[in-house]
Image 1 (cartoon, rainbow, N blue to C red):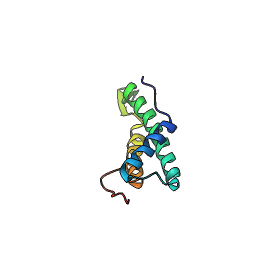
Image 2: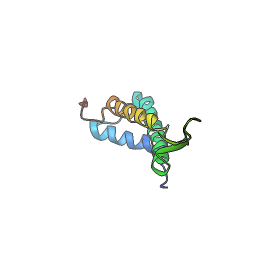
Image 3: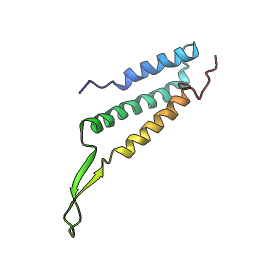
Image 4: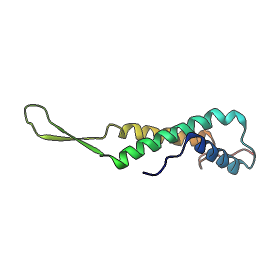
Length: 104
């Protein structure tokens, strides 16, 4: 398992991306959004690691009447999807995707 980035490392990366995109120093009022985005990226890394290195489908015995094995999707998959969508919205809020135009 590769060492995961910290929230601080993501904050620095996001700051550089914002400054590269806008051509100016990052405004301090963006820090709460940057921190929230960085924490989301850390959480996403942890869930992605669990899904990548763990089982994506979980096996369990069915109800008592059939006794057959049943397979269910990993319970973290919906959370992973939600975090991905949230991260894209956070990038948009920071002006870090093509649906936004930076103001200089």
